[in-house]
Length: 108
Image 1: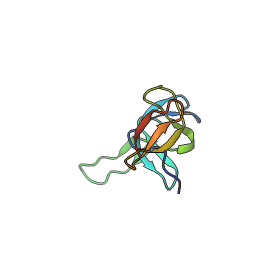
Image 2: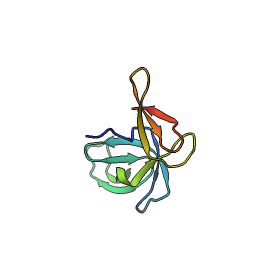
Image 3: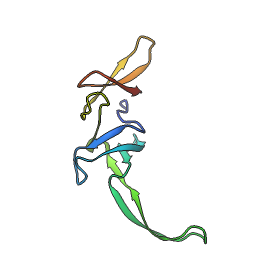
Image 4: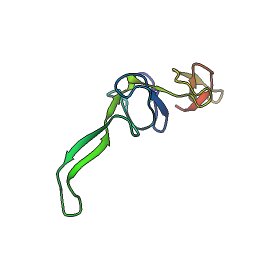
């Protein structure tokens, strides 16, 4: 499997679908399925059954999955959506870099 280009807490922009143009922070990543959950994006309503006296039932709102192909990471330096490259540092660590401005994005 290829290296993962998105990580938890990355800032992304949605590039396709009904939420196109919105920005948010990645909450969860499922690399095996190629999906991400983004904060306050793709919010759906779910009907939940009450399990006990403390946990009430009702209609709850939660974030649904987005396909990783429908989002692009935002570069912190240039502020634009960009593709991600990988580079090895002198000490052997691999880091993610912005393909627009070659800025390091964080650990990989």
